[in-house]
Length: 159
Length: 245
Image (cartoon, rainbow over all chains, first blue to last red; front, side, top):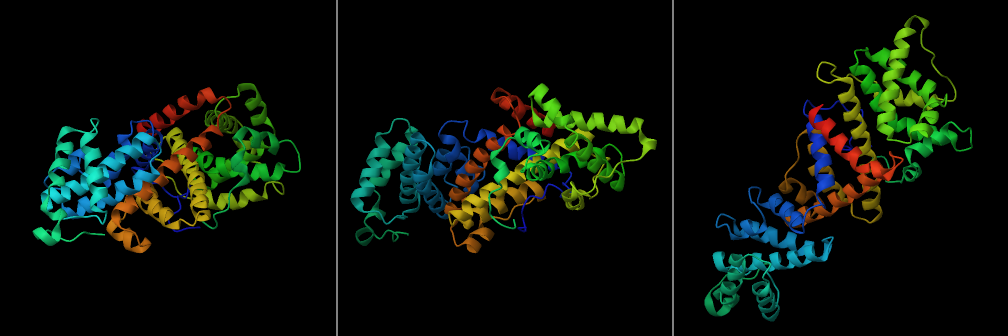
């Protein structure tokens, strides 16, 4: 038996009824919400107090490290999302985290080509399902000095 | 988990297993073991929380399994009601205890031979339950759900192992199962280096595992109901029972 296998004969903690109830709740509700539910859950794993992904990306308190972690999470959600709307949203959020790192931290956190990045920012800006402040971030990032580190002294691209 | 093998009985509904267990067919013994394994912890928890001492609760649980499962009583009721396994089980235990109370001077019949597997199960279920905290119904439901989650977890583990993705299993186990059953969960900063993944990837892998867990859990729940239309009612009731006792 594996060390952490849930043993039904294990003596439950005093809060076991509640925690088991919680387990059932997320199991049954995770996929009953709109596309943003999965992204929101992912976001809160990394930025615990965030209201939603947009809130986390726009919040000045979100650190560069957290933006990198969010970027990685959304990148994976682009392919593992269960619906097309969720995968599309993940792609926009992925671009938005890169934009936020450029604008707020003057750091390029991707090794994507300049052309690919321009396209991602353009698509983010053009997507009217995304909040205005995030789309504005895309336009600011498009002109961010850190996109041309050798010429403007921005920080090096991250993996 | 000892191995990531798939329990073949998981593809059968609990009703199928009960009927087969009482049928005398070649597969009856396997079906009996499977359904007993699922029912034992919840039945024991109910009886123990009703005020019986450990030894007596174990005896009564064993008696219930022998008298109710093997005597075809449950099969007959299942055919009549075609309802939810959990509801039938808890009502059957309640009635059994009332009946045993009336016959308490007659002693309990301990089955031999055909139910030898129960002796092993009894060992696993024979542990103290805090009867001051839980009503019998609440103890039953908490244990019933624990068994459900265990079965679901075993299947998830098997799937991830066969896909060569034990990292996702380790993340799920640490962040979800430990939190649910032990009340604490290690951080991604602790888990990440162990599985060789960064925090963002860990979280994304966990989301995938959670979703698969939810899908399997629904399949396991469907196996406990006869009529698919009862599924939502069963989910709602289970959640309410666990929230409110």
